[in-house]
Amino acid sequence: MMLNGCIQSLPKELKLLIGIFLVVLSIGFYTGLLFVNETSSISTNGIEENYLGNENDEDAEVMKFKKSPKEMLSIVHSHILSMSLIFFLLGVILSITNLPNKIKLFLMIEPFFSVLFTFGGLYFLWKEILWMKYLVIFSGTFMTLTFTASTLIILYQLIRKQN
Image (cartoon, rainbow, N blue to C red; front, side, top):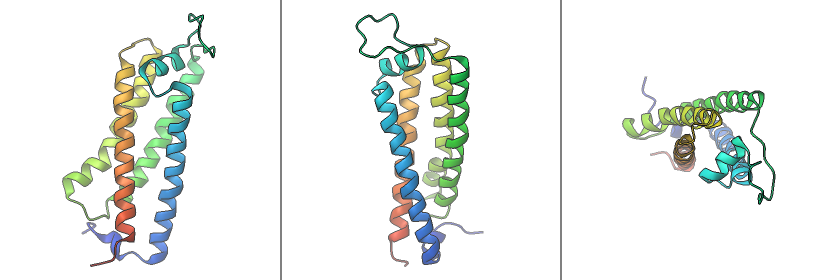
């Protein structure tokens, strides 16, 4: 079955549904990034402090304590489940766009690795493997870039006139 480029032949109602879904999904995704910025300043030291605490820093403006095992399992569990569903739905929609197969496959598969590396990295950082904070920053950035690229490609192809 040929899926490449099918997005342009979808009925207007389905295109509208997909477009609105992507806009609302993007608002949720980028609001999550705002939250990350508020809690960790999107820096390696901020991430470490957010999960391991800063009670030894007497000059800290806001006192933070190491997350409990229950908190960490909740964070990792909920994010891996929800992000895998987000990227599965995004990948299904991306599969019907008109893109070279290698680029499409990369954008469909890569986010799943980034999710595992980001939230697995947070867990291992919490276990005090401190270099994981660099993996978390790198994979989180990559996840955001692939989300943004995929969303923009889909939205562009939704509004583009059919050939």
